[in-house]
Each structure stands twice: as structure tokens, then as C-alpha cells.
Image (cartoon, rainbow, N blue to C red; front, side, top):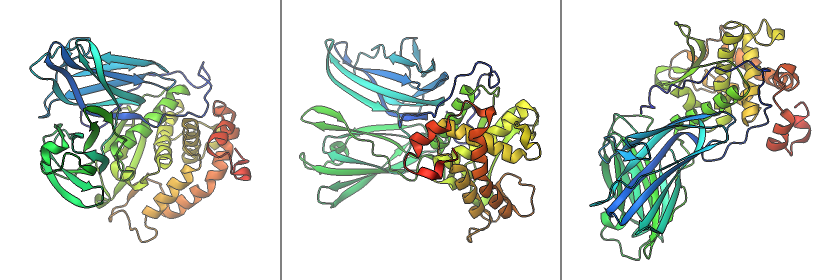
Length: 468
């Protein structure tokens, strides 16, 4: 699976708004729902027919639309790993998870010696779903242990409580570059006990007990570990990590150790896009866009996004990773930028490209796109004020506050068709209050419940939200 330069999602055609669509409330999405899903360790089988580990995948879809999930399995060396989850040996799972439904896949215990097989799994869903993987240890049919982990994403650093017997699993999500990862060990007093580095092939995997690699640790060691990693060439990929506690022979899943920042920007962009896509489907817009994440950075001056029809008439949304990174840690702002481009696709599908959907905005397709974007974001559960924040950030990056022109280039956001893009951004920021008022009162968007959103997101701000 290559999530680096091209992430395409094809979605089914839908009827127009008003043609039997479900009334939308503010969408509440579980914290661990993801569109990019990694499981850093996957094991099945055992030394013989009477002792084994069984793996079970569970996917829960809280969206009002179906989810298309695809998982791939990899060996330690990055080659495909073949496992049987009920349909014969295969290097992955493909499933449609019904709206508000779930799917379960259990391994068939085909690896009965001389040792269990292990590797890891990487997957993707077109809308965010909850992914879970459980490991059940059995002897003669009796369960003696069960571990459960949620899907995770790559991280710049993983930190975890540690004992000498703790288990560590690390995977490399890059399909092209080797990765060097490092394990740092610190004791309970804060003293550094040393570090070791290890190599992972593209899509490679490693798993071990801490004392097996750090042999000088006392058996009663107590402290912490930090795990970091870097691909052989600069890339968006970060190591995928899982740690398991071991105390007196008992196993225990340890807390999520991912650093809060910087986030896995590819996984973040795909999760936000999936939520906007799910709400677009739920509201019934007849659009079928592909989504492409393009490599790019401030160094080449490209922090841009586009939405509409390509040269062949296909509906597309494209965003450069540099723009994703520029938005930083604000999912709401990223959601607004993606929803704005989705709005251009909706315009193309409804009336023709750059022709507003709202007839009262016939001379202003950009504000029309802002209105549709705010409707999609509010319905999807993102902060409705994020649009103003996104434009303020873009104005900052477009030559204000000594940031320069994104490394010397000239392309920031869209072609604004203005000789004064800073002024145009400022004007659009000033309009966002009116856009929000219009969105919440517009009968075209009757499925958007602004009051429900206000009660959830802004219950204590009083008059600040009287217009909602």
C-alpha cells in the first residue's frame, strides 16, 4: 500500500440532497476511528496443534454510510504474509462494513508448528472506522491470555513504561525506504541506560522482549523506553509501535505511547478527508471524487489544494502535503480546506464548475464554496469557526509576519485571481461570520442542525453563538 504520493478513494454515486437523505445531526466520531490503520504486531499459530495464538480483527463503523476496508499483511522482511481468516490463505482482508455495523475476522489456526508466524498489518478505509486486533492464547482449547489493541498510526516518538520482560513491536510503513529505529532506555530515577538502533526493510517488522536486546538490564528493571525512527530518505513515514507489559508471566497491553505532536500527517489528512467524505455521502450529494495527497513542501513553494474536474472530466480533490503540514495540529482547519475543495466538486456536479449552488451567491463561487464547506464541517463535528482560522493561517503563510512566500514560490492555497491575495484572505476572514449565519439559516441546508452542534461544541460561550 503506497500512501505517500497517491491516496485515491472512489465513492459510490448518490442522490441529490432532499431525495430521501437522512437528517443529519452533528456527527460524533470515536477518538480511535481512523482511515489509515496500522497494527504493529500480527501473530497466529504456535509450536503444535494444542498450543496456539489466534488473531481476530474487528471493525466497527459508526458512520451513516458503509465503509470499505482493505488490510495487507507483511512478514518481518516486508514481503506479503499469508494468513487464513476464513476465505483461504491470503495476504490481506477486504471488507465492506455496513453503516453503523461491524465485521469480525478470526484466523483459522492453520500454523501449528514449529512456531507461530508473525508480522504486522497495514490498512485503509474510505471513511474512519474503529479497528481492533485481539490475540487469544490457547492451550488444548482453554484460553489463558487475551490481548487487545486498537489500530494506531505512525509517530515521531513512542514512550512507554517498561520492565525487563516487556514486549516491543515496530513496523515500517514505507513501501520504498528502509527505516532505522532507536530504542532509548531510562530507569525510574531518570538515568539514561543506553540506546540501540535497528534496521527495518520497507514494510518490515521487528518484535522482541526488552531484556533480549538490552542484556545488562536487571531482571527487576523498572523505568521507561522511548522509540524513534527515520527512513533512509526524507519522507512522511514514521515508525509504527506497540508495547506489551509482562509481569510474572502475565501479559498486559500498555497505554498508547504516541507523541501528541508532530502527528502522522498522512494518516491525519486521510482521517479528516474520510469524515468529510462520509458526511458528503450522508447528505446525499451526487459526487464521486478521488482524493490525492501530493508530495510537496515549503521548499518548492507549493502549499496548494484544488477541487473540481480534471482534464478528463473526472471529479478530483488534490492537496499538497505542505498545506497539510502548514495547518499543523488543527483538524478543524484542515477539514474546512478539504471541505472547500469538496464544495467545488459539488458545484461542478450540480450546476457547472465555479457556478454557485446557492443561487443568491451567483457572483461569488468562492463564498458559496465557503458556505458549503462550513455546512459539511459543522455536520461532521468540526468547529464551525475553523474556516476563519484556516484563512488567517494562509494569510500568514502568504507573505505576512516575515514567513515569506512559502520558500520563495507563489502558490499558496488556490489561484485567488487577485493581485492582492493578502487582502482577499482578510476579506474572506471578515466574511466568515456572515457565512456562518447564512449557513445556519439557509433552507438549502436544512439537514444541518446548528443548535445541536452549539450545544455540544460551545455550550458555555453564550452570546458568541447567538447567530447559530
